Length: 129
Image 1 (cartoon, rainbow, N blue to C red):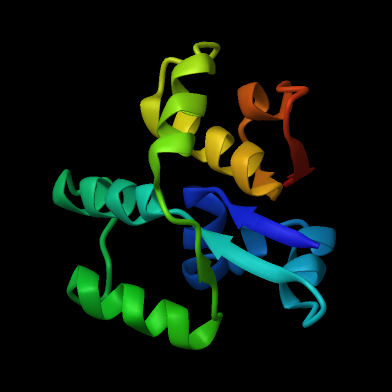
Image 2 (tube, rainbow, N blue to C red):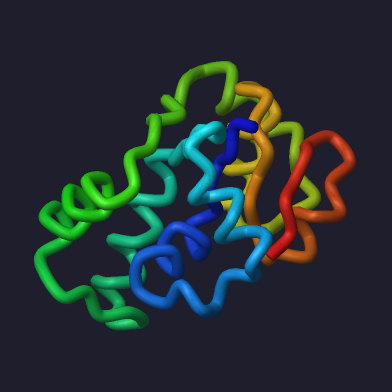
């Protein structure tokens, strides 16, 4: 399975793994599955850190590098197709969530999320946390 991690799932995987349901942890740990991450999640993390809504234990670039070392992921490149798909997903006020949903749709990924609005989208597969 190809799993696109929602920003909160990616963060919890590294700083609060007990917030992940056992089946989500199992899916993320299964070497047969691919973990994917959108650059939007890195941007969201930087925004949260800058606003002091989260505190990282090191500078952002170092935190992201360490997180990637711990759990390798593939980058879901933000491209024109994703941007156009995000424009069609007006169901969600949060543009970052629209980009994540569009990324899952364009790349054929399963979005791992706890976001109820995203889980209601019929146009993407999801794994609920």
